[in-house]
Image (cartoon, rainbow, N blue to C red; front, side, top):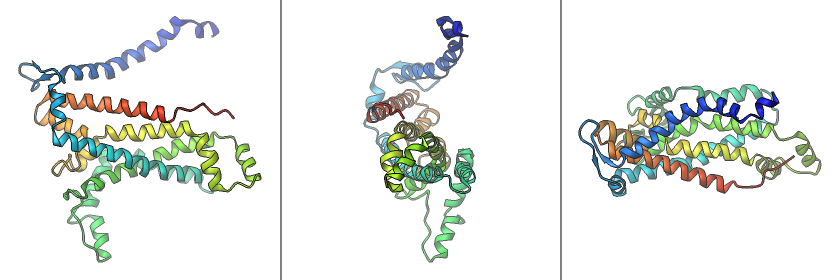
Amino acid sequence: MNKILGNKKAYFIFVAPAFIIYFFMAFVPIIMSGYYSMLEWNGIGEKVFVGLRNFAELMKNDAFLISVRNSLILAVASVIGQLIPAMFFAIVLSRGIRGEGFYRTVYFIPVLLSTVVIGQLFLKIYNADYGALNALLQAFGLKGQDWLGNTKIVLAASFFPIIWQYIGYHMLILYTGIKGVPAEIYEAARIDGATETQIAFRITMPLIKSTIKVSMTFAIIGSLKLFDLVWVLTKGGPLHASEVPSTLMYNTIFTRMEYGSGSAIAIFIVLECLIFYFLIEKFFKTEPITY
């Protein structure tokens, strides 16, 4: 066994299949998108090389700028709306309350549901004519809304189910991190007279900083490349009010047949995700804590 672990050829043999699959499934499409982004092409006819013109035109495209703004709003909303409740639930559940396993499962159920199913569910909830939300508002004497047709509220209506769906996901990640903290540390803090709030902010959170970094990375990167739920709910409308870069990319390539501009949006999404990933890494760059 030691000979295998010390053999570099063995590492290559085991890693090579996964690397080859990952290369062709991830890197090759990115390289091809980079190539297409420098073309003016409808997917069928002659390819015309235009250099960086597609990227320059994106910066003047109001729909693209709106979509980038919306994705950044969702990223901030995801950090606030997902990580804060998830941290609260994780801390409460990690104390060993009665029914801990039951609550942990219930909070995670939305993550198990298909995004399309959740989208269809909220289409019924938001329906202006027979939706449950308007029926509830009218029962209290309030006026119903066209939740997915009003440009002023469609963004919030589209983002709410996205944020709701993944609270349990981040809760489980943070819960696992908290469970990894030795119980002796908490016992010592309580003996010293620390309150539960002080323990949460001064002990738990600093000790699971690496876990928080993972959750924040998933929340922000997932928001920047979001597609499915927005597409099911609004397809980016009305008037691009709920547009995000991925839905605009899809419409650009498959509806307007502008492969060059659509590929430029795809490259932008990749670069945006990379930039935010490195920013998060830099923000959380601290010395590892040892127990």
